[in-house]
Image (cartoon, rainbow, N blue to C red):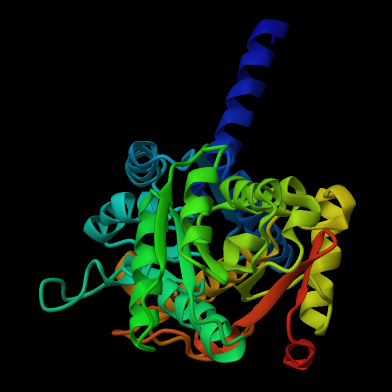
Length: 394
């Protein structure tokens, strides 16, 4: 046998083995923004998912098969998100997907999973509408699930902190112009109305805006005692820094994104005191959290030992464990059977955020409940528990 023929046979044998491996894996999509302003959330989520996959595979995988993650950067763009969903379903043949950071991308894209009867677990996006797009009677079954604290939960906590606990009477709302910002703003106004409070100012801005002077001046002139926010890190930092430039400092209380690394780093000292709802704070106060934090830091070595978006990483990690448990329980990767298993998980799943005990039902696809969420606070470059008593919660 000459060298050329031998090389061809070797190459064919290798290709055959790779093909057999690929066919034997369970392909799961991971969709999120891995570049751009939302990337601290997307990368942290992806890395949390990868940690979970590594652990699951090291323990024998699911149904005796290894998990193969298929990652796609949706760039926080609705149209790109639609393309990614179609590619993952039709070209890659994923059995389910975890991810979605941005509410707008989720609302635009997840319908393809619904149509294909494949589960998709939103593990960061929080818009209240996300799990309500495909409800009865129009849709018999809903394939959209979530492992993040929705905006109904968050807005009520933000308003409770501002009005009930800190006793502010005059509030301003600053929200970005995206679906995320405007749906969150609507949830805040609804929560305020329930307490008979009307905001003294409601201001909007765009992604990548670097000057919030006009919005802040209107809020200041209206007598705002506190600013409630719905946006992502870079623009939130512009709000904090803008107040410093104006010599006007009032508290910022907003959605969970005030914990993003690019808010904390870009705002610096001006971000101190900002408060936000959190499902996970990077404190090793349970064995599971300690194990997760240690594994993440060893694997990815983030700057300053701080996970860029701890919430995103933890929820990403938990979402894959929930999905893997459902596939194992179903005994198949068939989308209908996996959805049914998710809606009736029999095993308790030890996660970073919580221990999940029957987290979903047929009519409720929200894994996170109000009692699982605490208030965090920015303090000298990290997020800490705003209320020390919460640190003792398990």
